[in-house]
Image 1 (cartoon, helix red, strand yellow):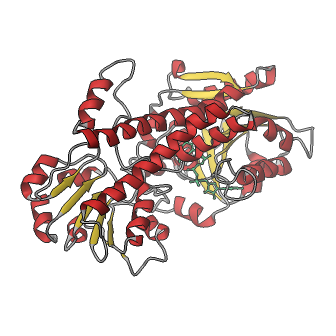
Image 2: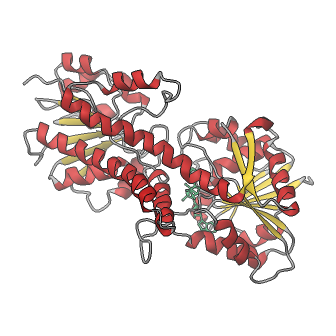
Length: 458
Ligand SMILES: NC(=O)c1ccc[n+]([C@@H]2O[C@H](COP(=O)([O-])OP(=O)(O)OC[C@H]3O[C@@H](n4cnc5c(N)ncnc54)[C@H](O)[C@@H]3O)[C@@H](O)[C@H]2O)c1
């Protein structure tokens, strides 16, 4: 079969895999290939057991794989054949040298740019899918054209706004698709070509275009604003606990103001995930670089409040359980950074688990999808941690349960049965405020929600 377009994506991770699966699924006339340096990951994308869990992903991949969706490790060959190349490699926070702990580590991204420049023999549109510091497209252009200026590359910014756990729905019905380009003839033509791809299933009015720098910056700002809402409500949850106000009542009251809106107002143990912290710190680093220290301090405080909230949660466990956790069995309900994903990157569960181990507690971790990653995150602590998928078995004989991930499953468990199987007094720390606290208290638990009065029997 002759395809209309050859689309390539470099990076088969949480973004590259689902995004390309959706394009292939919606556009049978395009050939979509996803490549990665990690051959195990590619083998997994080609198997029945995909490397990531995402509701609805299996069906989309099955529908397109082998038809017009391909996963491969042949990077050189695929670069040569592609018309459009999405770059979706990881851009983690730098852990070394200048900007360590703040700036984006661009080594994977730069390596990809060099490879494209080295192997490409015909003009290509390069699409930045990864989240990058503003003005990265300029550096990309320079690297791409450093070997051979005869091949024309047009670099577009097309940041991805999907949220893990709802990625398929987000990709199928996005609030908006953003495409940034140079405002030149070549730039606008490349932009229109990318618009046409999305227009196969996204309504035109939701496909918005801008200059490249605004597009790159918009992604960092979107994540900063989302995280800022979480830190804002979490900072108030601490005040609620001191004053007997109820964070859910406060969130409801302010959320009904249409200027504020009711989304992202759930207080919790804090946000996790590979993006929020990294992207805010990137924004902070950029602001400082331009001498904008007040802006940098403002955004940095969002990360600090998040850390404070997770620390507060563990301290609350310690003080509530009579100031010692030594030898006590604590069960973590959930380890993923959010529900409906197996991803544990930057999950608050990692910090909570490590702190509890420091306090010499014995941990039992349960999670429907994230135990494999949890074992990697907590490796070296085998003697203090056990992993049990069944929450009833996991809670058996424990002194306390801490709800860390808001899996629906935990809302509907038989808590009378769980209570009977636990040590007494039995504690529940609901780090996501998803349980029926009054009911748990009636059963006999000592209940510690976030941002609400505790319910104790002593
Ligand atoms: N995860 C999210 O929810 C999300 C959402 C929006 C945007 N983003 C952004 O998208 C980008 C990718 O994120 P992710 O979560 O998919 O990361 P990931 O770590 O899951 O995937 C990145 C993949 O790129 C591969 N890779 C690295 N260097 C390569 C190279 N030179 N050639 C080929 N493959 C290479 C890695 O092996 C890895 O499989 C990041 O910039 C991230 O900030 C992520």
